[in-house]
Image (cartoon, rainbow over all chains, first blue to last red; front, side, top):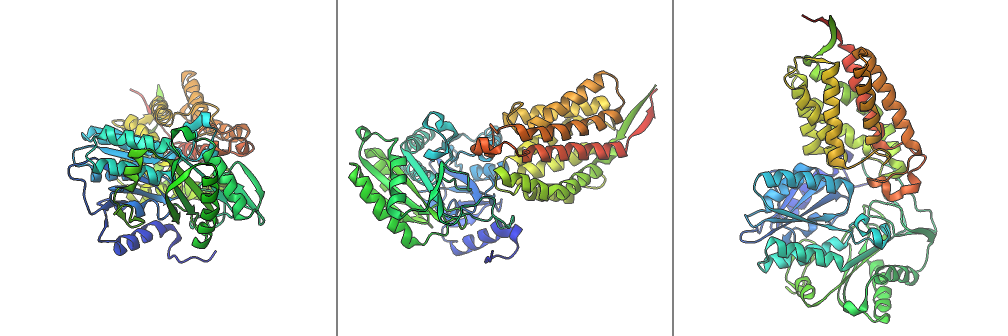
Length: 333
Length: 219
């Protein structure tokens, strides 16, 4: 595979150097170079922290900024950050009002966050967690605690950060984040594999002419492999997967996020959105706000993910609150 | 009376041998990981152990060297393996502390404490298809042989054999924890990558300890 890199074992450090240089008005590397911190600071409010493996850009670094994340821990490609990285991100985001650590449900992240919190609490920092589990096809509804966290994390961060900005306490912020992720469902469809630079070969394949429904952000196998379909049919599979678990009685307004998985032309994310929004509206839901583009990727995987959040008035207000970070701007600003 | 012991001076040698053996096994570990995970287990492990080896002070004792290894895995590696092996070596280091000579009983106590630490933080039990499926039988074997009064050398040889057998036995298990659990049934038929790296670690420890075993007259 041809890549724009230098050392394949140094891609994360090299990316962060570019990211911090390009966006030095908004972000800076912390004392720990694997922690990226917003230049805005968290004085007087709860800090919002996340983190995860690299290869999902613009997640997680692109969401550091005003009205979003205060600090993120950055792991190797598709590998959880270390507990030290999470701990240093927590330290950076704490101004005495506590820290909400909001991340995705993966074994490595769970372990490292747990260890980081143990240490943070010894230092007198109050930390609470909410673990995103929005990927509907990664486990049945009855085993929701086993589901992976994917692009729904972005909406969870947005809500929690807005609540913190409103002066919410740590408990308020955690409750808002939990409510946001509980109201959020995602699904991904993969049309091709991806290659971790240091590994140099794909560890899974999607055969030409096929697609994997429910694929994970690291190529975890999905629900089924089927023949490639037009956008309209892909949209229909994704829409029914996410709407199937929502009750219209709880509200009909949705925030809809369609993300390419890395290799998908932005043009195609809009083609998918056209079909998705039509089908969503045909089922009696309405689109309160749409986000379309590359929000949460998987290296150069071809495909799209759909995330919907069912909103009430307070979730709508928090989603619409101003935010200004590299990859998420303009909302209500 | 006499007893078989290793000097705590072997610390740097233990870590260097571990780094060497992990690097040598890296392609195999990555291959195993690729079957159910993302194929980078060997790469991440090699990075962590090599970094630790480069940080070890040649004059440090076993406990101090294992502490450096533990710190590196916890601070710099990440993933699930960083903390799991991090607490493993942290507990080994704590139990080795204060011992100028390590005998079979001390080693068994070190291993018991290390296995307990991993199980506590990882939450795995026997049969989940994780490194616990190598750690638990290996520790049982060491404890049984120690109680039977077997020589230290034989205990180490037996631990290596048990680690290898229990690693191979993970092939027939279905993953219930960790990333491989996402593919559940698809994990059957593949040796677990964590179990494999765990066997490499136990065997590497046995190799270095056996090389430096000496018989010390007991007063």
